[in-house]
Image (tube, rainbow, N blue to C red; front, side, top):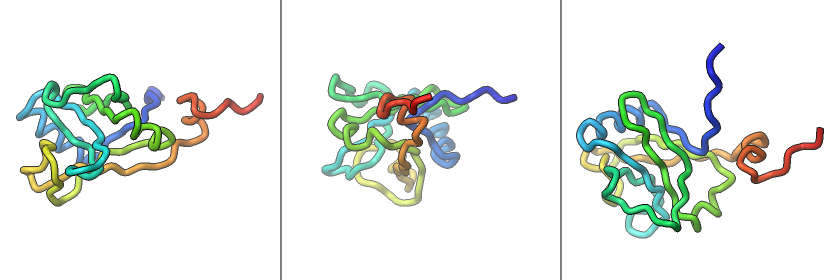
Length: 134
């Protein structure tokens, strides 16, 4: 029987995982910060660890486990998290060039967030809803 996967707010598609392996081979350990708008839109921005400074106003959403790459932490500002806290985010990769300073931009690709609402079980696990009475 396979081991159960850890509960997570973030995931990555196969296409995004391939790009992350390529980028980590060039840039080393990576991290994401889900942008909140302005000049880079609202995109997951990928940086080498240490290039983007995470502060006390940021929330760690989770850590992506991509085979062939270091674990990749994913952050979002606390104020934006308040709007997104009931969603699960999947980082995908699409053709096109986004604006901003994310590492995939020179490759003619851009990372994109796909979201879905958390399930009832996930809402309970993340303390966003009370458990159903037994």
